[in-house]
Amino acid sequence: MLERDNCFYEIRRQLVYKQAHYGTKVEIVARWYPSSKKCSKCGHVQEMKLSDRVFDCQNCGHKQDRDENASINLENAPHDIVRSA
Image (cartoon, rainbow, N blue to C red):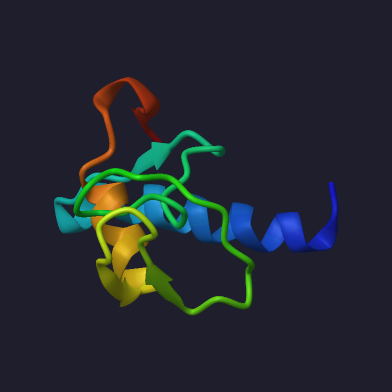
């Protein structure tokens, strides 16, 4: 396992450990779900470079910060690609 993978594993491990204490639930979304590339308004999926910081939908014209757009998509992800940690 690469060292950078260990860092992400440790963050996940701590979140899972603390979920019972704080009454929260940690959920994992399928790795290849296009949360950053999908419009949170119309559902259109488009290619984006990692350097693109604003999501600008080529279908409906919706513009939003890339991370905010992705967080909305993750919150509304289909149940069949979400699992408990």
